[in-house]
Image (cartoon, rainbow, N blue to C red; front, side):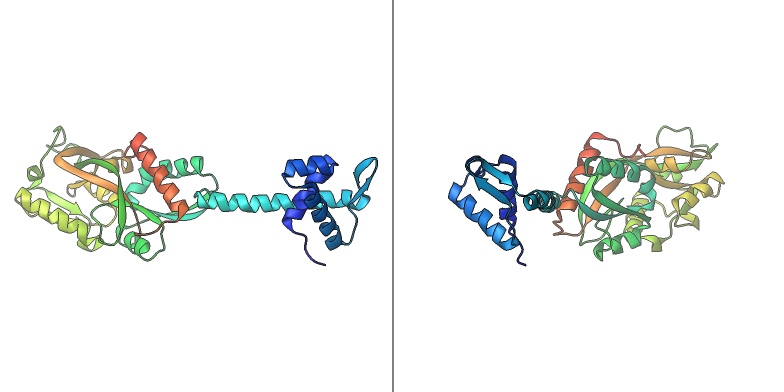
Length: 301
């Protein structure tokens, strides 16, 4: 048996509701003769009579009454399919893979995910917290659609700045400089330092080294650890001092003091592959950009 056309099903449903060829044709904005021809073609395709038409009017046959909910289900499903395509084109459905640098995930991931779920509830997000090197590799290799990370990065990525916050000297409680309102990097020239290893991310360390040179010293690094939480623990234990973005204070509430460094700032950016014009990605970028414009993302969580 041939399959009826969707148009014929829609005509059938309007006629079944109006039970008048004249009213149904007017509602469909087609000629009454065209409607009659399409209904006849539908009946021929199905091999069954759907309407009785006599001097008293038009009525559904028993088969027509049985066919009506089935035809309605087909047209409803077709409408749903069209709606899904429209929502996909608007970026309202689909899935995205998000990577968060470990040091920003604590305060950035919750508000970002909340905002996207609130505005795009049918957009599925897969999130992952990771170190900087695998994060950048993941974006460049297409494993992540968008990442939230610190600068500087590497060429080949499109970025949009979300936050700017002070960089602070992190000192153990009771340190002689802990009660200062502000410090310069040169104030810490004689301190032992705990830092991330250079291998953790070369672009960061090149920037750090230049800043230390401008301050007139090479830091005495006594211990290295790739984990910011571990660095905070080492500072709290009195092993040395370090410097971190002010939002890192949310990772440890005791044993350390954050003192702003004069003129030093850290930036958080969204990064993605150039030319990626997926509608869902565009919508997410817009949602997060609006969020950053109205919310202090360095203090939420």
